[in-house]
Length: 200
Ligand SMILES: [Zn+2]
Image 1 (cartoon, rainbow, N blue to C red):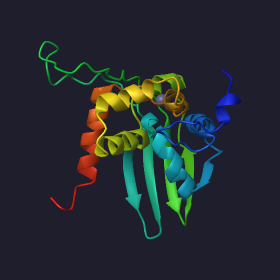
Image 2: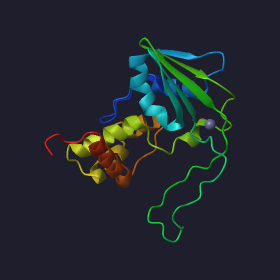
Image 3: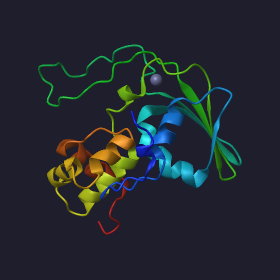
Image 4: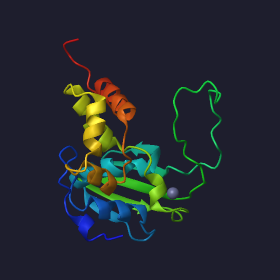
């Protein structure tokens, strides 16, 4: 893969991603135990939301002047979750993640405007591509906002697939899948839930 061309800022018409997001995502995937990543908090907040689909938060502690969070790889589990609905009754076809007991675990410490991310145990037991089938919170927020402007989910999904506006490239650079209109619709619902209209 040619990563040099990926370091440029994407010209996406919809998803304004920070420069070097692709490299940062890869660094985040391979943090060494004794070599933490240290970022200004503003930069962390602007970038992490685009690749938080790789990890899940498991614990959080708030101190007087710091916050410590523990996150695991999204594939940390080792048991296949029992379906709540039988396959015959299933209305939604969704790709379930295959739990493979990945041991990758990180600690994120926010203190005095700085964020330190360190790896705790072993590296991932799989490659980075398998973590690309879920939308990150940053992309979900952008899509939800578009729905709130009144665009139809099908229009937004089509816009993301266009080869002319850089949106497909932006999704790929940030390790996000190509959403269909149902995903976009769900993002719209989530956005409205998080931004209730004070007039209603
Ligand atoms: Zn993993």
